Length: 115
Image (cartoon, rainbow, N blue to C red):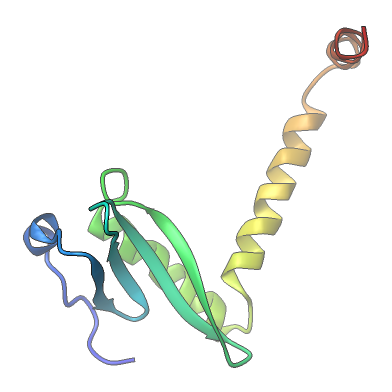
């Protein structure tokens, strides 16, 4: 895996040349041709390289990106696919949000949608 925490907050703020900049442990700052910057976690699962977006630089700090990457590294070590885990969590969250509506609210929404 190599060295970890290679980037600094000041260095990240100055990076604007398109490319990928490694912080170590699978965490990269990705700078697009349009100069948008975002965090990416790269890992291998069953021999296949996977990439997982962690958020744009203007919303996600270096410390937050490192914390997320660390959490996802642990998942990979446990044999889990972080992308699938996140997808399952999102589905569960959506299911819970759907359950929080009352029958009356659902009925009104159904009637309104089918007018």
